[in-house]
Image (cartoon, rainbow, N blue to C red; front, side, top):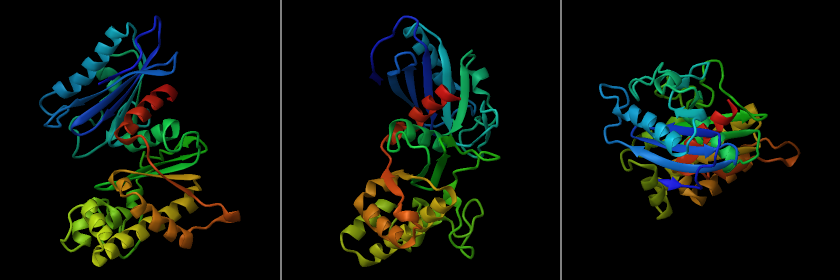
Length: 310
């Protein structure tokens, strides 16, 4: 738990809550002084939310109640970042099958019994809000975020507005099709970006030699030619995906987050080289590729930002 400066008389409070399968990150913020008051992590071993035992969700409510008591004021706004597609009124998650039992259609404002304006946002969308507020794309208005780990997620902002789309699907960039004749991914997309570079297919792409991207990259850096071929093929697919997103959305910045960002120059150097070959650059303008800066707190910071502007 990290604590910042203490409560000020009559302060207005905001909170950002980032829901994960086994951990929740929370941030309390003083709106008047524009400063953080505290950030903390709640963790559990079973990852349950509302399946049989509601204690995990109650812990979130207890945390907010404890903050209100200690800072001697009620929250004016609360942002909740969660996996899944948000409802159009941003009061709940409308679609999240198979994960975080009980999250679907839970109206957080009612559950928390709060008078605070409570807004729900997809976790990848929240991460982008965080990075454009305090992170790698601070102050930028046209940004694409790609989070590459087990799978590939993301979000986009154009003219300073977060893209949600008709059903909230905007930003699922892992399910871009790079090969219409390829095998279908978990969403039914043939030859997807996620299957081309996500951790979920490393074992298959390496014919059983590696189970994680880090193992593949380490072998590549150690001079393993086969590992190098697999890794560079993956990055070429990533470059094609970024090229397509650039042509569709015209961002000034593309942020790379998730575990793949730890690959550093072994990722960025070949990616830049492939983009030199693929990217359309009117008047010589090239896309800026940046590594995400906020780490595990991006979702919490973005949820807080969403609470402040929703």
